[in-house]
Length: 516
Image (cartoon, rainbow, N blue to C red; front, side, top):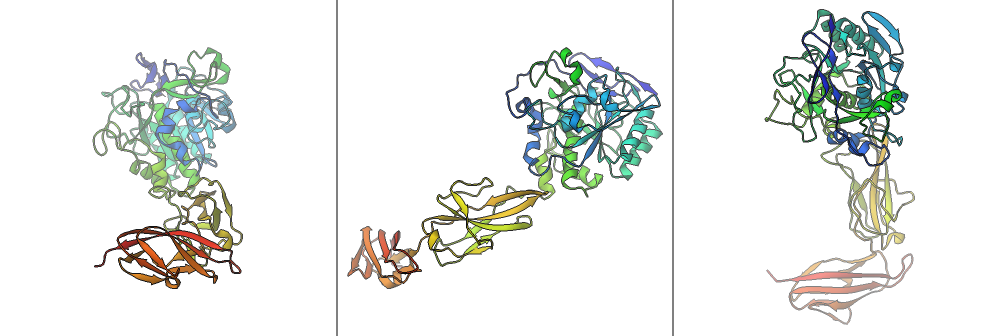
């Protein structure tokens, strides 16, 4: 069975004709100026940022995972070629190798770039899974025509090559027994098959293979999270992903003919719209999932993607958006890589030398190492190495007793944890400023008097004295504090130097409260 495309003039993308498999995408004609960055077009990758992909790259970038792109071939493009494996073509029953070098249509190259264009290489864009590999399997010719029999062969071939994900940005309005059997072959071997839901518009019939329950059907949304005008409707739609004006790779040897670029003038990138692009977003996210959790099954990955999607449109699952917009952060939260937010260690400390400080690690992943730090300034919990902090030698336990050298500083308790093999240090908020002298009370009743030796506490055995700075208190013979009326008394307390401590000084406040 042979299928061919027809066009929809409004967006200039290929849609799905009766009895045809065709690429589900097309070129957008809107120019877009991109600011410079580690990847020139990164700031313009609205879709990548909308699904929060960059927020999970500290966990994984897709290494170790291969995604099959069954399409028109993929490449060459300098931003993509390092991640492309030798491919194969299945064209009208004829089998050929090196499909990576033959993409006469440009569609497969664009799809592959969304999934796995390299990141932080000073050119172009970043893929969703920039360290994943692409296995290009070509079944579409230069006109976008293909056959179900070639598609079935391509699926089986990709499964046998050990891919974890198959991207099908193509479709028609029916399926054969051979295609059903190929999809079953993939499912039995725990390969996730992602398929574009179709660009035929709201009144079109179900597209296949997206309409098959063995695939994950993906529709497209625009920058405002609304359904694109070309998207189809139906109970078969599982998820939504960005699919309008998506910047990605095209063949570098034909870049001179590209009139609209999105990652630098005369560069091999352009904008395309379609559910083809949306499907690629889901395939890229799936690659990240399998990279972080290799034991995850295709069924488990499917359920996590659906369960964590951000609901769009009518409450609950609907025929326009399926379960909703994919969300990489929520996916990895569900996989156990984040707490409700980032969880930090905490400390229980009075900020006093000689008194134990305790580090706590509730809800954190398995801890590899503890470390206490001495800091010159206070601060909140952070994953960024704070300024003016130095590690304390031989302080790698959950408890630490501040020493003379800690006086005047602030302490932080840190944990070294592993997130999918990537080490990460998390710093607690600081303790109170460490002091060597303090008071046993912070409040006393009006009219009450207390002896200095009871009030002033210290790790040092040196002589103690106290001076009133302000407030409704008096000190008699420097030995007794008397609270005369309501208010707050500010005191300066001093402990003379005595080995092993220096002279210790602290300013404290004591509140005077009424008698009951």
